[in-house]
Image (cartoon, rainbow, N blue to C red; front, side, top):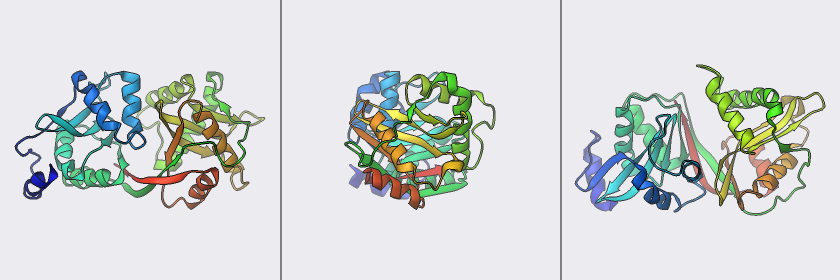
Length: 296
């Protein structure tokens, strides 16, 4: 397919599509096709598969998020979630310009793009040409998986977060977010981020250890969940407890909890974070791909 499309893409930069190729917002009738597409790589595409699991449809959400699909003679060959973030799904980088043009026409400003490195970086290049300026590009984020028990002893103090502890968990989540992206998740208001944290607690996807004084010592979330894969996100250690060699046992406990839901535990980590990568390796994670994140 791309052999006949590539020459056209090289000479056309206006966001229109060649004969037989179309881009449109997916509807409910496209749900099965999107699920089949994403199942080609259930680890890399856990975000969209988790969305389909909870929403049950590829149709736009009530919050305004939608999925753009690339079709070749009526067959879905690539897609991209367009909400607060952009998340490509089996998207060949050659089609990044078509997706970027369609996403730009919505008038939405995106917080980030994340997912497999090649399509994310291609989207970034196309969006940048359309005026979407990134303030940081993390081009190498190893995608790690563990399909079995951890290789170190889990810390049994890690438990599921409780709504009764929401007022303690929320500040720890906000601190992790600010360390990771460089600004507060409460910019523009607290409601959206607070609802996100509360939802993870209600779903049993918040993992936390509260110290004797009630402060969070360690926390993580299962940010995307299917019956096959969980994706760990938001890993954070209270600065007062860092450097004591505790992280591996906490991560082992995270894996133990995640394996109650799905056989494969995954996460992605900044390539420059050598300490975290060493910890994950000790726990038993191995690399099976590379993600990238673009922060706009």
